[in-house]
Image (cartoon, rainbow, N blue to C red; front, side, top):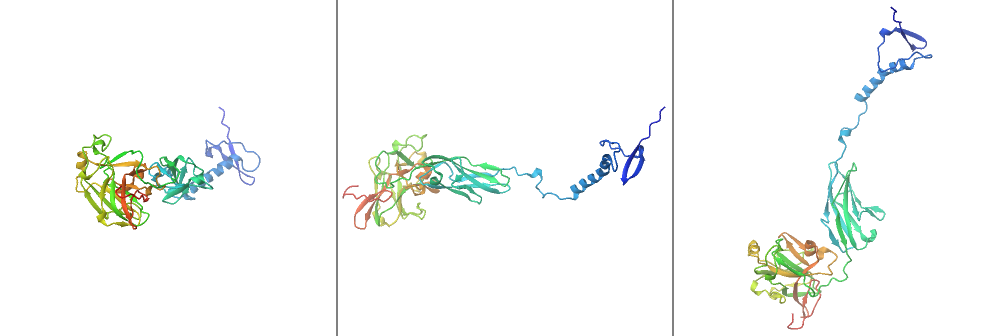
Length: 391
């Protein structure tokens, strides 16, 4: 039998000194290719064998003792949660008559909101800048002149970003841009009557009134209301026709600083239903004994008396239908609109804000000026002298 040939592995450890070891004493590395010695010095295979343990030790030391990333910033902790964003102003699609209008959004995020970007007609550009706000409350003022937009409907949207560039959008709303009316004077309620609103209605409104602006100091003499026959109208589209009207209150008060009504009124008067005139002119209520004199804006209107069971009126299908007309020349600022309601018994709103239509109630007043002249005035206070004996 042939004896196996004895092999030796030669290593250059230091200089030219060779160290020989029997093959049986050499540790086997199955993944390392053993090649023959070539040239002088240490062979590449032996260099690998020599350096591999050092390399492994280095990796072990670096992983355990070397520099580490900040806590909580591992791959598994990446911020993938988008912000939450919603509209504050406007709350829904609306109309503006002014060249500029302001928008506001509220935003929050688990790691913090970086900024909110606003878009008008698909663009956030406004001149040389972008519509971006990085500080709450997140707002922006758009200027149609600067953006080059004419009258029409334009989509608006807000987009919130966090530090990781996650983003979320508000619903898209429409802004209807219309020209500023050239005339804001309402004289008489002539022309086509659109219809009548009933009090109480499906919203539970309890006060309806109009703001008036006298052009000089005047004394309030009469409050005039135009009602429609309740037998011809309904509380809602689903209801049957009303069975009758109800008693009502007339009242007057000075306008507050925000130009909406305040409570309590300066004075009020209980009026029985039998005194109301339907479809045949204005119901005239004499309030001259109140002795009220105004030099600035004031409100006059009517309500259902608190002594009457409001719910029972609805059940009995009884209400006072006030006639209204569409105002073709509303003021540019919706909050300055003249006809006002107390919606749901809680908040005062202009009819433009509530109905998104510039509606004016057929409410007017008769006043006496300091020179003795009397006039019936409509919301903006334009003086309309009336001949004696005429209304």
